[in-house]
Image (tube, rainbow, N blue to C red; front, side, top):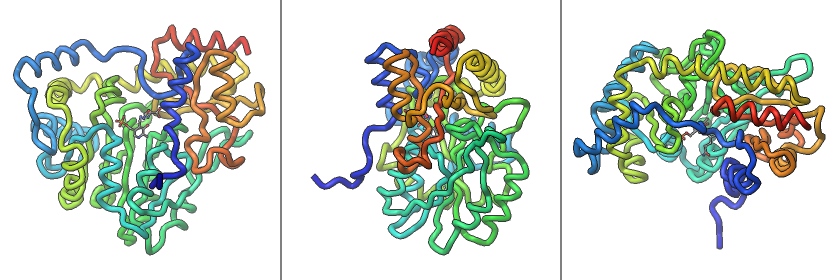
Length: 387
Ligand code: PMP
Ligand code: GLN
């Protein structure tokens, strides 16, 4: 059978969760909370169903949710997207990414992707016939134990064929976030190039140490040619609902909707109504960073009692830790070993590179998800401390 994606296997998140289940390991791999969403949100779903919201909603999303997203983005980022023509409710950030890439990337187009990158990006670009141009972040060193963006390399990668530049901040898996200066640099880099920016802001509400999320929606000059994507899964502890959204100027949105309407048509009506209702109170998303910062600190402190060396995480519900004091296995093998022999599951960071087996993709790092109950984190740390 001829494959359109011969190099693609099963996504690492599924592989590691299956392995965790098989070995009854504590799963700090795939990014999802091990606790339930707010009962109030769940009650709103039941209410929406009882109210009769059980048939096809409008293709772009239900009006109350489009309005609620518009109001939030306006309040937080001072950008007015028109709910009916510039916001689309999608089946997770996943569908927003895929629909955007399908809508805009043609054979021969280049798409710039920063490595490490979320695993859907390359297959999506390839399905559209595009060519990924990968720009690596500078990996952590002994003196500077953080990934760093190298904007000069982004600038150098932009050429005549560049269609899209994909960005993801707060960044999965490194936890890197943008600051105001980064947006200045980005403005300078893309000025006059005509390229579009696909900004995966799935973790927009999870950012630590008093930092502010630098959405591309904050800058009019960037927003004019950006698609800004978010995920309710991360924000409301509902990854299994698969609902997200994208905001983009009208002409861009119209093209994305051409794909969206034939990929999924629309997404679950009662969930959309429940989310719209729940969004009326900003407190849940405004308090999310503080909620996760405590968990980050708990896991970070816990790992300091082990032979792992945690790296700083500025956002998302992930942190990276260096395992060089424990093992010199490549990352994928280490992650498997840790699950099978020690009952804790992590994600190899090498899975966020084009060639996970290449030495340049292996920095002896594991990604830990801390969207877990404190007891889960403590139980995992106890196992790790024994290694
Ligand atoms: N982008 C990034 C960076 C992610 O980490 C994820 C998944 N967690 C997604 C997109 C997909 O989000 P969703 O589950 O809403 O489809
Ligand atoms: N985004 C999640 C992660 O990085 C996984 C989502 C998925 O399994 N597709 O862990």
